[in-house]
Amino acid sequence: MIRRESPDLLALQELRGFGRRRIATLADSLGLTAHLAPSVFGQAVAVLVRPPLRIDRARSVTWRLHHAAAAVTVGPLTVVSTHLNPMSGYRRYREATWLAARYRRRGPVLIAGDLNACSPSDDPDPSEGRSDPRAIRAFERAGLVDLWRLAGSGDGCTVPTGGGVGDAFRPMRLDYVFGTPAVVPRVREVRVLRGGEIEYASDHYPVVVELIAGNS
Image (cartoon, rainbow, N blue to C red; front, top):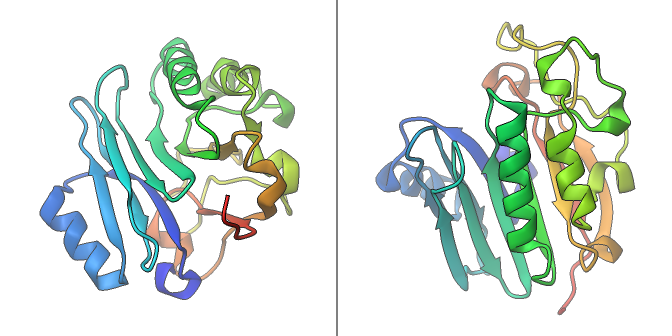
């Protein structure tokens, strides 16, 4: 799927068992360059970049987060891959508040990943623990834009997948790409990929954001 879609920038989460050697092997097989952020308590995350784009700056955030955040700067754009706390709505809210404060004023920024929460705009089931909307509201109150709400097509649900790997969820949207206002004019389309090997490769569907290229 990654080879077929050929993304210029790829945010990955739940990299259980991945160290720097394994992520480098994966990146090399895809013609990409990787930055991995390990996790103290949870699972690693990463951002991969396709040449001729190059990583000008890379940061790993391994504190204040149950999992981690990997941030790379490519030209004027910063891409953050993160995975919020899967167990506590309050802790997700704290993580989201901290990430939003850290990145909201840094020009063009994308924050992408499994946020383990439903947007209040999605009318979630109150009986579902992940329906706690505080984490999503924290990003929105910081001025970050839910790019699916801006330019999404289809139903937007990112779980469950088929293939017998998605039975832990009812249909909902847990995976997001947020952008700062500087990114918004360049957003062309947001879509969720489904079908084929995607149905059994993960318990989450991937989200694709198409941006109009530019020099600033």
